[in-house]
Image (tube, rainbow, N blue to C red; front, side):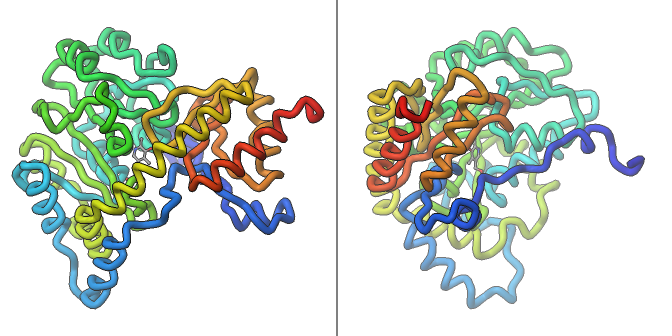
Length: 365
Ligand SMILES: *Cc1c(COP(=O)(O)O)cnc(C)c1O
């Protein structure tokens, strides 16, 4: 169709994981658990829900573009509101970064099989999209540094990374940063930072600010607000000022902003989430190892498993569905022989391991 640019025509629409309802219907099951989208198994932050209820009374009023949340974030992280942006999820902000900074001739550089949300946004802009392979399922930062060209404009790094769950350290980032010219913008996506922050190897990027780095965070994961669409970013005020020119003036919505403000105060929910996740990671990781599954150590709220072949990964995914467990095959990310499993509640994690044991049993091979 001549109306559609070739770089749009060649995209695949985002394929959400399968829903619990759909799997129940297809397989005739009454109970299905979903460990596929890195959602918070404990629900949403109660303080966020309360704040949203209160915000509902003022839905006739246009929102302020996230100003109040930006002020709260600035307070909490000891910055100025001018260094903070709020948006419709961190992907909403990512989309604004792409519109604000990328020109037609620019290149984007990241790892192979990067977070699919970023892949879709960057490829949808029609610029050159270049990648370097993983090394041991982690970012190969020296190779990325060597891959910078005079046309590189944006480098995307997720720490912890989705879908591998791996992290890079501050020393690794600093060594990499020395090779990055000032004209290159680094997107540091920290969607899972809350889960990683107790690992002493995980850098707290709030303690070092660079003028060409924008840090993105979200309420979707650790605060359980994936459905509300609220995320935020920190950067040099010039970067933020230009993003604010491009952002939709009334993004984020009033309910989403209220959710973020409420969540920020919900230390109790965050604490419960992190405890449950740490336990879940241990349960799933050790359980999978015991079953002989190749599983990558993770600092996020999911683990990646690696299989002999694409068909084996597909078989495992399908048979788990038959057992009432939805997991995420990673073909769309670009790792067709891998499957990602999000942590659930402890009973869900144990049910998943039971199902996996059945799927792995020699009788079925
Ligand atoms: C889940 C996730 C996000 C969150 O996106 P939102 O738009 O804030 O929901 C961002 N980056 C990565 C790597 C993710 O996995």
